[in-house]
Amino acid sequence: MLHISRSLTKLLGELKKLPSVGDKTALRLAFHLLKSPENLSALAKSLLEVRDGVRFCSTCFGITESDPCHLCTTPRDDASICVVEEPQDILAMERSQAFKGRYHVLHGALSPLNGVTPGQLRIAELLQRLENGSVKEVLLATNFTVEGEATALYLTRLIKPLSIKVTRLAHGIPIGSDLEYVDAATVQRAVEGRSEL
Amino acid sequence: MLHISRSLTKLLGELKKLPSVGDKTALRLAFHLLKSPENLSALAKSLLEVRDGVRFCSTCFGITESDPCHLCTTPRDDASICVVEEPQDILAMERSQAFKGRYHVLHGALSPLNGVTPGQLRIAELLQRLENGSVKEVLLATNFTVEGEATALYLTRLIKPLSIKVTRLAHGIPIGSDLEYVDAATVQRAVEGRSEL
Image: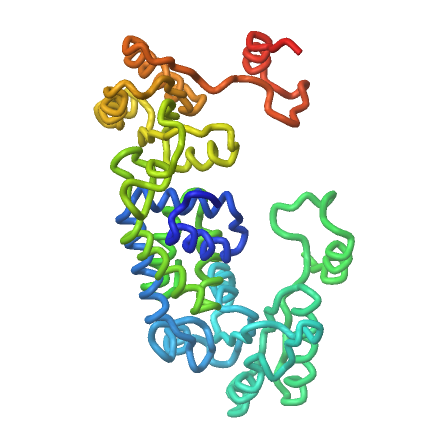
């Protein structure tokens, strides 16, 4: 990049580390911010506030500013725990308003090829939460990828012997789908999981 | 957005002010940054460095850290000035390596409907640079939009009476184009501007 200031070049480098931001997007973002210094300052300030204020909840390992977090302290159903891979997955679950229990974030999924073993996930902490016997159901909401499915299988084998019900989110046709375009494996699962009307 | 920390909500708000960043992209960017606190700090730091270090050159009004800027001080052809709308347009010109003169950034284009009048652009400063008579050619490289064309026309009427040659970037078929898909107006300009081989 020719004839750009040193600090701008550095900013472009930092912006390009963001997901799906390349050379052109980084330039557009940087020049947009240059045009409105007050937005630039506000963005820098809120980044620092997030860095200093946001931590992981010591119970569920979701993100929070106060430990334990809101979801761990408000009255909810203590008998069920929903296990997710990442903190943002909690948002997807909460948007559905279908789950009223507690959460547990693993911070990843098992992936031996990428060197992610059970010890690197928050699995020991999950088992510890199940020890006192108050939890009756664990809903596995890891992603429906190879890694997510492997993690769900691994957790099932660990938790079932504790006489706790282990459930998994249903597979099926997404709302609003055209059956014609749904992949065969999903249709197969939807047939297997069909319900009586 | 439910159950997100206050500072994270604020960061999402700031990210959404960026061009082509909506709810989902802002969430993805924010959680990406949360996962790597060192990137988050580096981004905040370089934003502040850009805010404090980058200013506009008092001669050409491009961005720079030292005033006057690199492009205004290195040996280049003083007889020609290329007029562009925004600082980033200088980069596009420099990438082409086709122009060896000086630059002048207007910081916008005439747009009476949006309240942008000649007084808000760096037009007076451009005319001042033309006063000493050393400039022989002004290359108008404003965008090929209604506003950019109007600005080019306006500047032509101001500069031509000073006995300075006023030129405009050529219209034509972009390199690598399929003639079949080029719009009619562009083909028309390409025919009008055809060159002998």
